[in-house]
Image (cartoon, rainbow, N blue to C red; front, side):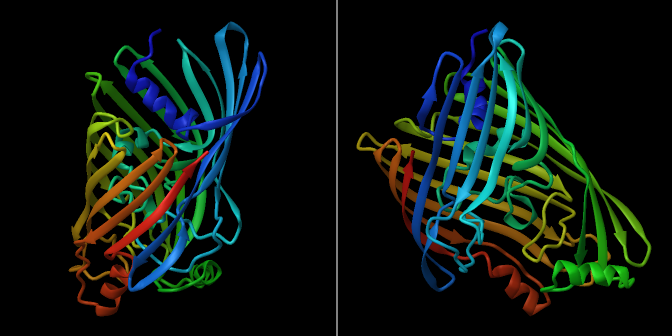
Length: 402
């Protein structure tokens, strides 16, 4: 079966996570490659300047040719913090703050066949990412409106829309169409408290004491699907949905069943890596899918991401991106003792960037963010805390891919 451009791009999300890789071993049946990148940047935001890690990572990609045209494969990827821990707080978790030098990002195994598709099991990019990944090309301020990095800018592991944990996924393509379906098979219990700066153990203790400010959350399996249509060589259309369910048990004895839902569409024109114009946009509607900057669950919101870039013949690529995640007011599930019914949550910012491709795998860049967010609240302390991780900023960095 002839593979379309859409199928190859979507397959690259799971099987070839880096632009380039170094082959370590190859024989008639097996191959092992190493990939990843090191990214370091100087960033100035929130009145501070610091040298920080830029989500650097390393991965090992294993492939084994089987009989009847089947292939087995596995991938292990770790985040790497080559510059040490950083305590600066800036928008988006481009650097997951970790004490360890290595921390888990991806890890899955699978089999694939040109006609029958591929099936994978493990921690991997969710089907939802197929819908929205084409706006995620800023090296510093990638978007936080597409419903990928949920639960206050984490990696989307909990609900399977980002680097989902415990995911079973199937992919295939037919003509101009490619699709992905998945199930995230898990059952997680955790505690939440309507108290600022409380530890997990303290929160659990409040719940056991029957304090109404504490809740136990039972998060069950999630399910997702995405469809990509390659309309022309340069134009791709995407659509998808992801759904989960969790039960909230309040310390006072009341139970509440909540649906975690996101659905949306995207459009992509061109190739970000190639000379010329590139453009992408996506929009989503979500319910109980993400949290505000205080960790409070958002009842419903609309997210929009967009990016336009142009790569010149001299290997300079300029781009501008605009993102908005609008929950409006009255967005927090009740009862919540930290919630004001007049609170407004609207994360909104633009990014202007310039990348100089010294080679296809070596980039010198500068990116600047202008914040237009609105986090209005009658509680001045909460409004200040909400705004703390959203600010203007500028970053200069160096990106070296293996």
